[in-house]
Image 1: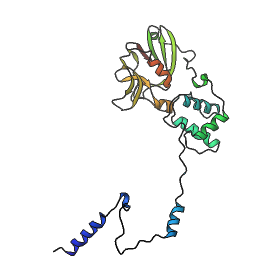
Image 2: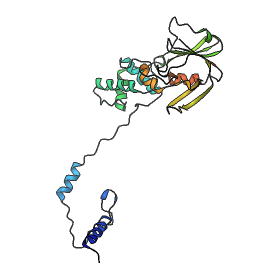
Image 3: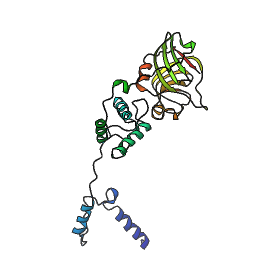
Length: 269
């Protein structure tokens, strides 16, 4: 003979399993039991329908944080025309670009999202001129008066100056290109001296920090020259863990294709 408590528990369990779909909604084949009545209030139904206002469609961003490429360079160059972006276009949409877009949107009474919608892009193109190739890809040159280390004057050399914060690709004493770079912090300094490129890795990921190191050219243990999206976004506000960071992705991609294992690397003050 079952006790009253047992009967109650069994009844509750049966009720819980009786035709309930996801999120507790009645299953499609569940019907009211005989003798029960189900009344739907017309006014309640109307109230429910009228209160569910459809949300406006989400407008996809043309560009946003993390975007890369030619269009981002054009964006940065156009913002530069309005004195909202004071740095060299990099083609990488980071926090600096996001802040500049926010400032533009505030200036022209647009929704301040930090991302470039079709509306923002159209407005920006309407108040600026088409930037030239030189404006989007300004040449980086060795600072006036700077001299190469004598060790950089023979052979194929990645000549890296901590004084000018530049990397020059030098062939037989002639500078082919010069890129802005940054180095490690005082706790993880970039080593100085003469080295050679041990190996290259196009899509490298750090096994220590688990961060992306595209176009890596290793020259001293775990230290390498490589592209840094953080450098592109934050500039000299940050530092590497000892590597030589480059922020111009297109330029280092081109350099990567020219540098070979065994080429000389000179890091100096």
